[in-house]
Structure formats: C-alpha cells, structure tokens
Image 1 (tube, one colour):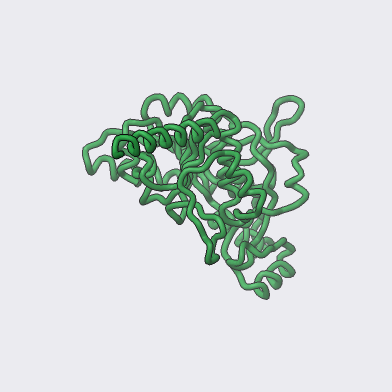
Image 2 (cartoon, rainbow, N blue to C red):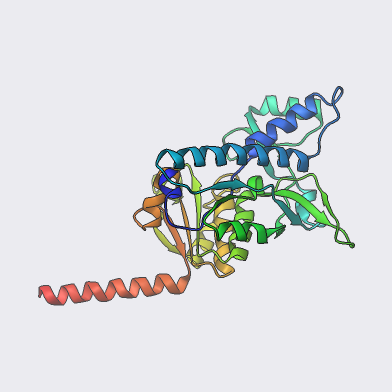
Length: 300
C-alpha cells in the first residue's frame, strides 16, 4: 500500500466490513436475552470507525518511516438510501463468517435470521442492501482530499440512513454495498480513475473453466454484455462490475480492477483490468492499427 500512498495524488479510500459487521450481528443475536441487540446502522458505524482508525494509523506509521509527512484521516460517513428501496424486502447482502448448509440452517432457525449460499463458498447471514443515493457531508471528503490528505470514507458502504419529510436522518437496518458507494462518491467528487482492489490481478470471463480468459482492456458496452451473460456472479465480481459500469455511465474515464500488490503497476497500465468508455477504446484500437500498418510499410 505504501507505494500508492506516496504518489502525488488525491486519494480517497473506501473499505469493506462484511465479515466484521456480520460477526457483531451474530454476537448480538446470540446474546439478545442478556444484552439489548444493536441495529445494523450502529454496527456499521462501529466497524467503520474501528477499521478507519486501524488503516489511518497504519498508513501514517508507514509514511513516517520513509519521511513522508502526508496525513491520513477516517471519516464516519452516513449514506442516504431510499426508504422504499426494494432491497429492504429481499435481503441479499452476505455478511459474517461462512458456514456449512446444515450449520447455517440450524443457526437461522435458532436465531430467526436469514441465510443464503454465497457463490459456492459456503452459507452466510444475509441482510437488506439498498442502493446508495447520497453521500452525506461529501463536501468534507472533498475538502480533505484537496489538501493531499488520504481520506478513508464510506467504509462498509456507509452508515445507512433515510431522511424524513423534515430533513431529519434516521439509521436503518441494512448494509450498503461498498463498491456501489465508491462509484457514487467518485462520481460526485469528479474523480477520473476509480480503482477496485480484490484478490486477483485481473477480471476473467468463464472463470474456473477450461476457456477462462483474463480481461486486460475492455469497453463499457462489452463489459455490460459480459455481466448480462452471467460471467460475474452477485456474490463475487458482480458488484464490482456493476459499480464500474455505473461510474463510467455517469462520466468517469477509467475503472481499474486489480489486486493490492498490482495497484501501482495497474495505474501505469501495466496490469489489471481496465474498463473504459467505448470511444476511448475505439480511439486506442484505431491508433494501434495505424501504428501496425506504419510498421508493416516501413519493414516492406
């Protein structure tokens, strides 16, 4: 991470919290007869603040070791959702640890929770996941970003809130997808490049099959076709691809999906999956074709 922090850039970081908030939720359910259970918005706030504290401290310690005075700060971020979002009626967001099917169903019956199989990796607790509408206090994120501070915001997708007719905010029981929140935040801030870090250096189609193929540079429309064709399941790469498309459709220039260790080379275009506007890809292919033709002519 240090090489990314040392770049002369404006950097906003959004992190996940699925495993952490799920564990707190299960612990709260197990202890419900002794301790009043806490709502999901409070649990998201707890994990958001704790994770931001850990990251900000680690980032600044690493920067100071190499003599870099750059600061990092974590913001407790509320994210407004629609009270009538259909996601409230169909819990789909997996959180917490993985269980076998038998374990999950036993826990669901004991605690009165909902569980679902998660992309062949096991069974998990699922909760409501409405779409993000508005990043509250986004102006504070922008102000800090413009001072070259590393800003950690929107962690876990943000603390889910709704606004009533008088403009007052209230927390709700949900976990917002972090990738979708990242796309909204990047769009509002006018960020050019959005990078999503995952476990693999590149996105692949036909994943796990003999004809698996990694994607290097791909257009917005082609990526949409791959998504519709079912190459990116909801429990794995699906949310990242959906967020990438939303960001580009709102005017973003480039989305990079890669691993943490490949982040800086990916920014230079050396690795990673780069999703770009159709026109940008067409222009690049046209330039490459012209260069190839020129080389053939010079050789002949």
